[in-house]
Structure formats: structure tokens, C-alpha cells
Amino acid sequence: MSYSSAGKDFKTKIEKQISNKQDLEKLEEWSEKVLVVKSIKATENDLKKFHSSSYIDILKKTNVTDDIEALEKELAQHGLNYDCPVLERNFDFVCRIAGGTLTAAMLLCRKISRIAINWSGGWHHAQRDEAEGFCYVNDIVLGIQKLQKVFDKILYVDLDVHHGTVYSSFEPSAIVVQCGADILFGDRVGQCNVTIKALVKCVKKIINCNIPCLVLGGGGYNFANTARYWTCITSTIIDTEIDDDIPDCSEYFTLYTPTYELRINPGNQKDYNTEEYIANVIDTIHKYCDFITKNNIIQK
Ligand SMILES: [Zn+2]
Image 1: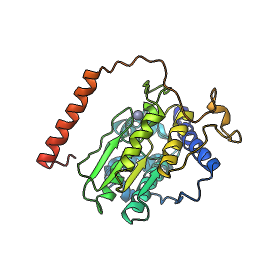
Image 2: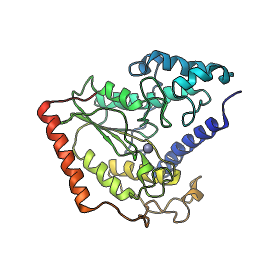
Image 3: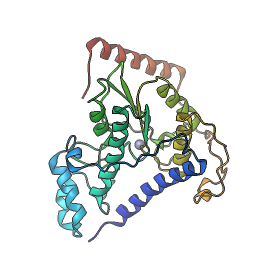
Image 4: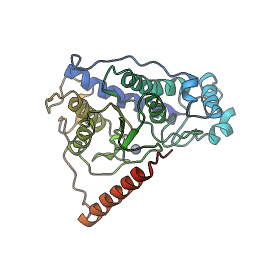
């Protein structure tokens, strides 16, 4: 058996999600305000700073063999099945993903930029020893580890509908924000009712803190909305208003049906969040913040 059709399908989807976004940006001609940096591919040693040797070794093996079936047991032990099927050249793929985030972190460490974006990063579910929830490599942990060489306290903010497995601390000297788009209205996995406008408001607050900020992608299973969202965040970061109409010269123009507009409206889902519930959530967060600050906890 060679690579499963599920694996090929999954990889095509990821590539489409990323290229959609690049297409929109290119059309907006932001080159004067954005420094586009070619990312450096992560090495095996880079990945092993968080992931176990046995996990990275099995990923490497999938890169060079056509007989995936022979590795089935070993793959299953490391979560490489079901929602994390083996992809063609899987190891190269994870090195590219991690390399993008490490390059972005390097730009912040060297003070080349205050805000660095890697929309193909944000794979927050991957564990030390296994793939999980569509994520093969935890580029976020690797990025935070790199930032910690220069910045002592990192605040991690996860805007994805699913929460990640990373750590955070307060009074940060740098912020990492994961902008998973599966929390948006119209996402078949997230099934939430959040708009781009609301999320842009969140990211704006974060970047207005005026400290170094690493901005990452994440989930997003409605590709048109994911591209819309990340395009709006990019325009917010570079403080540039963009037209609401999707340019009709875009290769992916038809995907933006039926509105062909950048912003999305909320759906008709009932809001089950009562004022009491929201007040309770805010109160709990304050209590956690107080506890962490008082005890100077850095959770790992
Ligand atoms: Zn998610």
C-alpha cells in the first residue's frame, strides 16, 4: 500500500487553505508594508527539542518507504492514523511547517520585526510523542521555546475553537497568538457563530499591547472563510483598509460564493450564553490570573 487517499486529500486541503490566503494577499499588493521572508526548513534536531526521538524517527521512516502497511503498528503507537493519516513526504512537510514558525520567532528574537506571521503554523494538538487532531508537529511549543531564549515570559493566546496543549505566563515580554479559523460562523467542524469582526477586535487588542507578537494560523475547514479571516488580520496588523469586494481576478474567486465579499455576517444560531454565564467565565479567568500572578507559576 502506498499513501492513503485520505492522506492525499488532507494534504491537498491544507495546501488549498494556505494558497487561498496567499492569493488574496498577493492581489491586495501589500508588498510595501510586508516583509516576506523565506522560511528556513526545521532540522531533525529542531523538532527533537520538543518531540521524542522515537516519534521523529517514525516520521522520517514514512518519508523514504512506499510500504506504509509494514509500519502500521508503529504508526498507530504514535497517533499516525485516523485524523492524522500518513502524508506523502510527511517528514519534509512537518519540517516546513515548524521551520515557518521558527523563522518567524527568529525575526522577533533578532528584533527584525515586532510582529511576525506564519499562517501555515498553529498546529496546537501535536503531543511530544504523537500526532493528534490533524497536527503532526507542535510548531507553537517549538516557537515558544525559541522565543524564551530572548523573552522571559510568553503569553500564549489560543483563539481556535479547540484549545491547544501549550503553556503560558503573565506580564509577558512576548505574545504568541493562534488564530484557528474553525471558531468562525460557517465552519463545519467548529459549528460556532463567531464573526471575523469580533476576532479582529481580539487580535487588535493583542497587537496593541506593543510587545513582540508571533501570529499563527490553526484550524479552519471552510477555506474561503479561513482566507477571509487571515486576510483581515493581516490588513489589521499592517493598518491598511481593504475593499470588501473579493477581486474577481482571483484564481479562487468562485469559492467566495454567494456574497463574494470579505466580511461575513453571523448566522441564525441561538446564543445560549446568558449574561450570568459570561460574568462567571470572566470571574473565573480573573481568579486564575490572580492565582498565577501571586504564586508566580509558569505552567508547563
Ligand atoms: Zn481547531
